[in-house]
Length: 292
Image 1 (cartoon, rainbow, N blue to C red):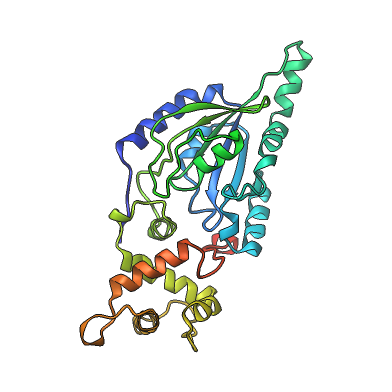
Image 2: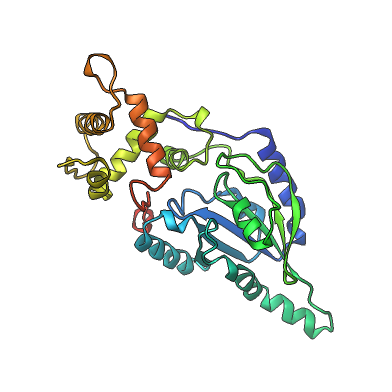
């Protein structure tokens, strides 16, 4: 399945960001801790130019903690200032202005050496849809400024937001890129809710999730759905193994239609919803080792 979504407001947002980048000291790139690499927009490298980059792994409470630590180490090895936060609860978010301030130290010292008084740090906050950008902005501003929704595409325009006396944020709409070169990236984005559900096939996404969960989190599947056994897979599971697991989950959760057959649409929606709401557990869909 080829998943694409690049509406007009995203193209406009990209143009606006390129125009505003000269006013920016630091780019805050927000990614989903469950898919830290796949939720990085390659267009940001073009937009951010040579600006210092703060990489924030949001929704860390929903991800595998051990793998989040691995990803932070991975990004720091690449030269980024990388940190994990949970914007919903606020864990870690209070340190963001300090992390930004650290990245502007050299520029600030240069200005002060010439007799100029340093102004507040200006940061561009950018990320894919539904990564928690508005929640983070409201948390930093300590008031409701950005509109929040559990669907992608809520933010449509740009706005400057004061964060205390030390930082000013430029909010932007979440933007995806025109084409996913790796089809699996589209599946991961769809699974985590970065792409509107109206544009995806739930069964395709559920099959992808089951493949990952069978390989990496079989015990989480057993515990959530009361299963006694999960097919042990070495590599890609067969279609028969996927159908067998679909049937087992569907029966356990009552997703049955006439004749005792499994309702695969309902089972698929159930699986995706429970992954997104952390009911299956703290799951990360990709590892740094897979990039090597």
